[in-house]
Structures are given as C-alpha cells and as structure tokens.
Image 1 (cartoon, rainbow, N blue to C red):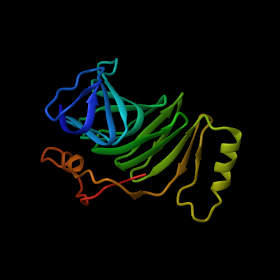
Image 2 (tube, rainbow, N blue to C red):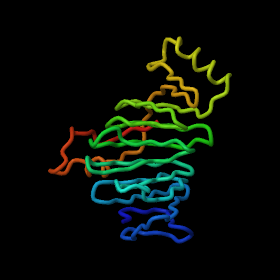
Image 3 (tube, rainbow, N blue to C red):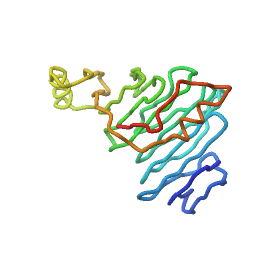
Length: 208
C-alpha cells in the first residue's frame, strides 16, 4: 500500500496515499517527488526522479524483488521482511534476519552507490559476492576497465581514505564518506515496534 506520495506515478497514472501496489507495477517519481510503500515487515521509499518495478521472487520463500531502473531507493526491512534489490544486474539484500535499512542509488549503467545504514548487506554481481558491513558506504563500479582497477589500487595508498578499495574481477567497491541526507524517521520508526525492537536512532539519517 502507498503510505506517502508526492509527484509520484504508477504507470502513467498519478498515485496517492492509500493506493494498492500490485506485482509488475512500474513506480516512478518526478523531480522533487517522493513515493513510500509499505507492507507489514517492509517499507520502500523512492526519492526524486526514480523508477522501480515491484515483483515477487520465483521461489517459495516470499518477499519482494525491487528492480531499480534509475534514481534512489531506500528500504527498511524488519526481521521478517525479505527483499532483494536489483540494480544494473547487481543483487543487494540483507545478510541476516535482522532490522535493515539500506540506500541504493543507480548513478549509471556501470556505477552504483550503496549505503548499509543499519544491518549488513550482501552484494552479488555475476557470480561474485561481497558483504557490506553496517555503516559502510561504497561507490560500486561494475565491470571495471583496467584503468579503473589501477586507479582503485592506487587509491588504497591515499592517507585520507577511510576504507580500502575491495576488488573483484566483476566489480570494485570504493569506500566513500557519508554526507548529510534526507531524514527518513518514518522508516526507522517502523523497525522499532514492540515485536521487533532495535537500537535508538537519531531523528536524521544519512546517505551517500
């Protein structure tokens, strides 16, 4: 169900709070738009100029597959919430059944930004996997060229780099700082119900 909508659409139709989302729906937001949808254990938020398609996984495990074509999606999953975010063929999901909040931004066809605000994430791309620790944020380069790989290796020696680059054949993870971002207190509070308590949070959140 849609819980908040500003300059948002399902298909070509403007959407409002209270609308129901179905499998295969294409969700999008305009400039300065926001769309938030929620189920009992999962909340998804699309920031401005984002496009996402909601699907169900093929297996019996249930949950949601969120295919991000462009822009930024933020998800907040409770312990029982199951989600896989698909972005440029990469798969991002919680590593365990714990409350998880993550930001995923599609920069272009070869670059993502991933921030594990709460809980760790499993990142998979074309058969290679990496764990993104809680609190870590990365610029992710997909199918990097030799030049990009060399630049990443050189960056490991930079004294101001907080996290070393993580190199795989298919992708590179380059640690980045966390800049102040849009507050998402509603997503945080949905993880704090009596049946799924978590640590207290500040009233603001951050994203890469």
